[in-house]
Length: 297
Ligand SMILES: NC(=O)c1ccc[n+]([C@@H]2O[C@H](COP(=O)([O-])OP(=O)(O)OC[C@H]3O[C@@H](n4cnc5c(N)ncnc54)[C@H](OP(=O)(O)O)[C@@H]3O)[C@@H](O)[C@H]2O)c1
Image (tube, rainbow, N blue to C red; front, side, top):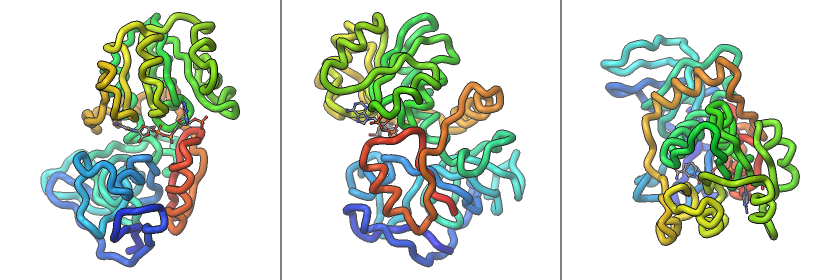
């Protein structure tokens, strides 16, 4: 099969499309014929060797966590899924024609493989950090870095729970944030004044890692009402850094329910053929997007 692999840590050009042995589903796992794979910043962080404690890597290594595809092998002890089912979920080496998944759910009706591949890890992250930050219906949540994958999920889930959301993004994404139900404003000079003008903030999420954790603490008045997923210095300010994934099957079930009742839709910003993984990583590393990037297999 074709798969994207890297033999040394480094920039996007260490990625190669190679011929490789097909993986097989061990006990408790399934294999899918991958139709689309989500591109996450974690993928290029792993490729750079940045997050080896959370994601130990043995070289040469495959790339990719998220996938949507057709079940074609079912491991021992797995029930509730059949060959031919269309599923989305998380596994390893998903930038490939076949990949083994450790968590999956049936794709909701009407979702394409391309769209479905964009959901698993960002929805797990969004649900986890909303739980950790503890925002209540009727309160206002500030989201720094709101137009990307995680932000698109957070904004819609928070709105569905009756939370008012103020989101920051670049000028080109202000209308997008408004469409997702948030009060938009731009990051950059004077952004805290613009946020204050929109109203009081009860809790805040740092999704961009742009060095604004102290300002988020000042805006909420309480470091315990701030969570970062992108700034490792957050604990220096008394703020929780959230880095340990919660239950992916529970997140997929909740994602499917939200998608089915049209409370959640994460658009695909750009899709790329599998052979263009280098371009997908280069674009993801730019740090600017609207929704998700996806590889089509
Ligand atoms: N710890 C965890 O468990 C975990 C889980 C998932 C992701 N992450 C991390 O969280 C971050 C976000 O992930 P993602 O998938 O949502 O990324 P993404 O899809 O690439 O989105 C990045 C977003 O950041 C915005 N942005 C760029 N510069 C900004 C700035 N100076 N101020 C505020 N916003 C800015 C961009 O908005 P514009 O395009 O409008 O500029 C874009 O919407 C990544 O660093 C990722 O590694 C961590």
